[in-house]
Amino acid sequence: MNWTPDSWRTFEALQQPLWPEQDQLDRVEKTLSTVPPLVFAGETRDLRQRLAKVSRGEAFLLQAGDCAESFDGFNADQIRDKLKVILQMAVVLTYSSGVPAIKVGRIAGQFAKPRSNPTETVDGTELPSFLGHMVNDLPFSDADRRPNPERLLHAYNQSASTLNLLRAFTKGGFADLHRVNTWNSEFVAQSPSGQRYAQLGDEITRALRFMEAAGISSHHPEIHEADFFTSHEALILQYEEALTRKDSLTGDWYNCSAHMVWIGERTRKLDGAHVEFFRGIHNPIGCKIGPTATPDEVVALCDALDPDRSPGRLTLISRMGHQGVAEGLPPLLKAVRESGHPVVWACDPMHGNTFTADSGHKTRDFEHVVAEVAGFFSAHKEAGTHPGGIHVEVTGDDVTECVGGASVVETTDLSKRYETMCDPRLNASQGIELAFRVAELLQ
Image (cartoon, rainbow, N blue to C red; front, side, top):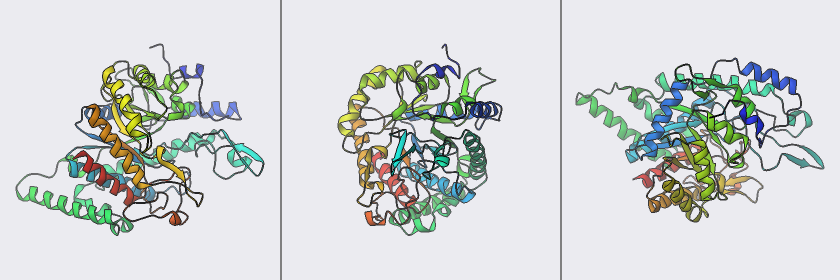
């Protein structure tokens, strides 16, 4: 392949920080290159096999979690509540549609965010934009906005702690389907979607009791444990390179910072550094595809990132906006289908539907989110391809960041609990409501 983990360095790397101290960055990279991997090659191969089923229409991808993880307020309850809403959404999708839901979190590494402009100006002062806690901090001061390589080590350590707790929760009994109703947070249980979920939980409990009464064992691991994978946008390439390892069994290179990583809409340049880095790692990978993408560009990306046409290798994540999906997506589906690439198609209904409310808050309308997912399904039906999954920003907290939903969040509510560091997220009740709406489309 004429590829090495550092071959991206000879290509143009977009959205990278201007690190002020090269010696400090070098020391941090050297340290990261010697730390234990966060995930293992065998785990990523497992996810890749599951995504191959998604590409054939035999499973559904649920990729969900925070827009940007924070170093502040990091605790076990926060991780548990994020996991809880993803488990709830997966149960709704699986039970309502009969399709296995592959659970991939935007967690344990989602610390960096691309920005429209490298700097921002406030009252005549220009400073670097906030790029996520992996790079700098949110307050508008020279010290906070100065990129600091030591934050890469903090990101690694927090990711390791998060993964440790996720594994404990998913394998230690918390994810047991006998506990399905205990995942319903108090504020969610009072919402229409929470009440609907509670009814579904009761049905699952009765089904498990019937199995046991009929002499059918419910001790299968799938009942008591959950397989949960991590993902993030692999934006800061020095961090990703430092955590890339050669698998001792296969000799292949794997990015061990997450099970799955993706390229963003702003960094998918065909001859850019991110595509160069991604083409050599053997993880399942994703690529965001926005409304400016042409059929030829998308097929060229498939050729570069998945030349072997391997099922489960590449997930294309469309983000067209609810008004653009009907026109923009079908030509891409047709071109990729005719190229023979067995990609997973997922829908990101969040990023193309952002607007600024009268209050000045950046927000999204829940009905616009649902409309884009519905348009995504409709386009696939027309093209004869599989709508493989959704990719959403959602939190387990009772935030007021996206308007709409059955437990209505009004524009005037946005200031009450607007807690995101970057993009607005669905709260838990909106996330569960979305899962029910998607399950209806799957049926």
